[in-house]
Length: 262
Image (cartoon, rainbow, N blue to C red; front, side):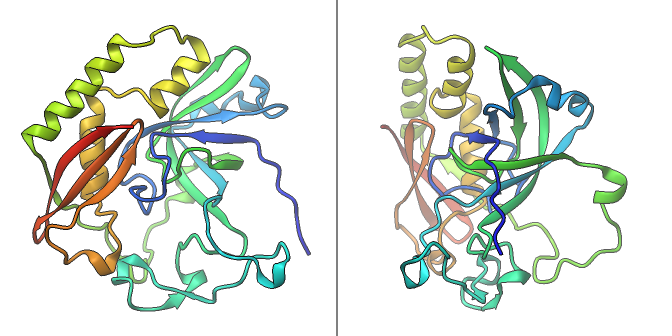
């Protein structure tokens, strides 16, 4: 049996690739937008939602690279995965994980609802703390209700506590590079207004606040678990309109070495 889920909107975000996206929601409070599409962008559909501080978002993993089995549209099934939390070496049942490689290819996240804007007749949900990338299809939104959703006396299996954030420093050269890019963008095209301007701010235009967002994302250590012991290797995380080069200079210490405009 199959159930076709409608796409009700799309996530607009500074991260366009999977590398660098927090592995759980609310680890890094990066601002982003859910842009609703017709006919689901009717303002009346969101009446009352502004009273809730957080929302549940159901969404699709649309960048998975699982190959379809037997050349049909049914994705191959992985009964076990290797959670990064366990070092990427130990296998765990897919239903005991939050792996993206799920039979349904559906994700579920609770995020902070900053505000609701209606611009040019389009409904925009301004959120923070998402673990989704740019263009993620949204299939449902529900309010977060603390008395039933925040449970006490629970057990979190192999992930009992939040991951430890690493120390991240930025070299003077990289810091000057991002300031220069910010300055160049501020002097550039400022003709965009309304909806286009808001989307551009989230997807492309850098601000000084993005420096801390970038450091917080890298502090979550997006590197593959099996490569976390490497010293001196350069990794690149794409954020908005720049590529961030970083590497480990000693155990637990990451360093941003270059920021390059795309």
